Amino acid sequence: MIEVAKTDETRTRVAPVRRWSDDLADNIEIPPQTWQDAGYDAFHYANVGVLLGIVGGCTSLVMNVIGSVLWPAISGEAQHPLRLIQIYLTFPLGESALMLNSGMLLALGCILYLATGMLYGVGFVLAMSYLFPNARLRERLATCSILALLVWAINFYLLISWLQPLLLGGRWIVELIPWWVGAVTHLVFGLTIATLYQGHKSSSLNAASD
Image (cartoon, rainbow, N blue to C red; front, side, top):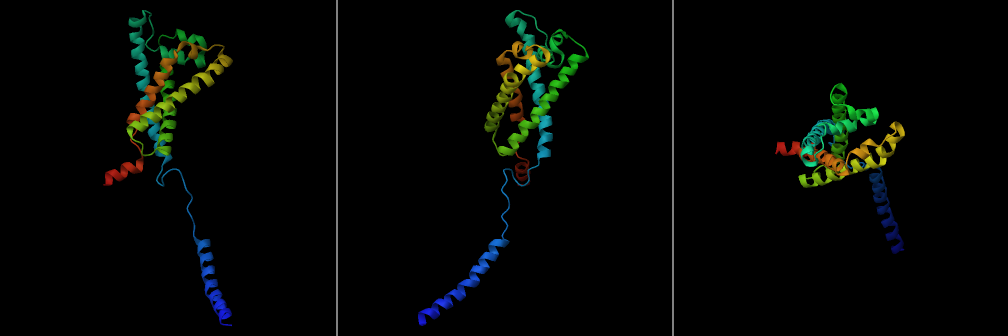
């Protein structure tokens, strides 16, 4: 009888504890886990990407202009300083773009080139700020180099190589731009963004407040 009484008393004490535990578990809300920090501002990083993309486009374009100016001394063949833009414009204009030596169309090609860099800059900065918010310079250089080479390979050999012949009847971009020129151009673009990018917004604010 004593053992039965103790058992009933134990059950009487345990039951409220179990009910309390169940009620507590029902009322506890676990916040959803996210990849980015709570203060992540995609709009801010998109704006940063626009600016850095334009700067990266300018850097890669200037590098190509310098290379085109030096090319006659290396190869003995004359080349227009904006040869890259001439070839770039073959996508909307076809082979006739290679004959452009000056004028509004060539200037428009430069603007379109920088606008393309702006769009890629947004993608690069969003990827870095979202996946590697506190990356150091060395890590940013590696990340942007990989992204730049991926963009080059996908654009040249998975998209343009078949899309330009399909629409315009020629493969001028792939055939007239040596592979190493395309790769280096994209690398300069990516490395420029990696060098100028300052990292996570909240980290910068915390460092300033300290």
